[in-house]
Image (tube, rainbow, N blue to C red):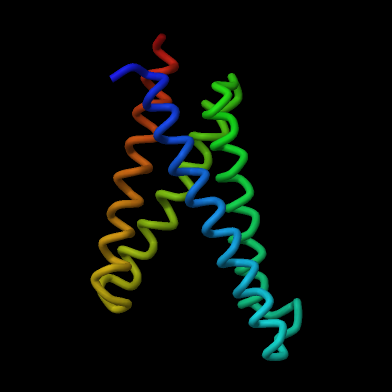
Length: 125
């Protein structure tokens, strides 16, 4: 499969993950603020962190779509952060939140490895 097709697949998945996460984190932040949480509470702070990561994922997808030179660095950082997040879910919760969350975490790890493999293959060309 040509490398550019891999870039399109990765860009589409990062865009989907970023937009979905962005909508969900904004919805969760608004829900927490309606309940009466202040902006200094940990739950609201974590949604702002999720918001920032989703914006990074969208930026990464734009870089992959346009095959920019900086996507090797930003894409690697985004993939590694995403891998640490998935690994933390696997290690700390296991199947406590259900088999779906556990399976999606392993799927996220596989996507992280796929992203890093394509970035490394692009660097060798």
